[in-house]
Figure (cartoon, rainbow over the protein chains, first blue to last red):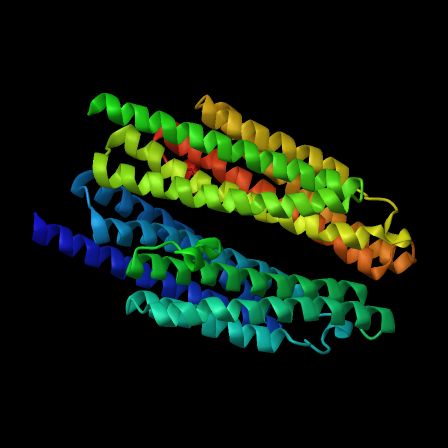
Length: 221
Length: 221
């Protein structure tokens, strides 16, 4: 029974790593589709999101079976609860990849093919944060998770800066209203990806240190 | 032991209803603050969100204890897992109330005090959906939950319509770029509230029918 349980926990971890890898690929593809104005790749992102949705449900069912049949306690229970939340966060990140992919057609018009402002910087930061959050989960590395949480402030600043710049460019007539709104939309989606990635990092700290750092509660403990 | 467990489940339900009521009040206040351009009320929304964050953590800890100490199975386990997800969805709805409250100062400038376009319609729909989703949870009423899920499409349409109208108004010069972007921001936040409310309704169906309807999976079963 004990060995069987350990095997099932390992299997859950493998499923979650597969989920994380699919979501990371989908995010990277959505951004590549945007940069290259590649509508075929954008359509593939939307198609892959459906596979990610199915995998989320599959993982949720594995977790439910584990809880019902194995009655896990202590660190095993914490791992399973963290896995459930990370699974949900990953699925939501893929939803944002879909949102970004849906912005691709709007950037095909010539007037929108201009400057992406800080989007490339935000993209690099979102990718790095997601990779670090996933690494921190796989290696159960709370200090790496903590560094992810700190980077979220940088992303928030970049998003605010984007909003201001877009307003300036629309007013100056160098950006159309439509493409400006789309740039803002992409910026916000990247900022939301960073928020969800921060949630994952917080779950890793919960997992490793048995304390909830969400909403700054960690500072009080 | 059995009676003790039933008591703890009831207590969890009471906590969740308290959470739901606080979140609903915060959403309604954020919208009232926006309509009345009331910065004091907006500040109160942000303050209340911190209480909601604390309550989320408290409920999460109750759930963790229940899982660790009571080893629930079958419908009890489903209830606890649904409660955990609804708890998280409610906390995120309050985050959107904060986002809306943060838009209040932007609407104080005279040029922004104009038409809110479809925002009042979206507000009414978001409030009705949230109330129905919570009722469907309290009464475990899957048909009411199903009606919430259907209304989400109406909200998506309203959000898209808002985007188009804002572009037209900015181009026509009847809306400033800043207030147009803020209107879009509020519209998107209301649309996200409807998404999270839809998640709650899906959890109610999972709870009542032991099937996962997320991502349209229900249609396949």
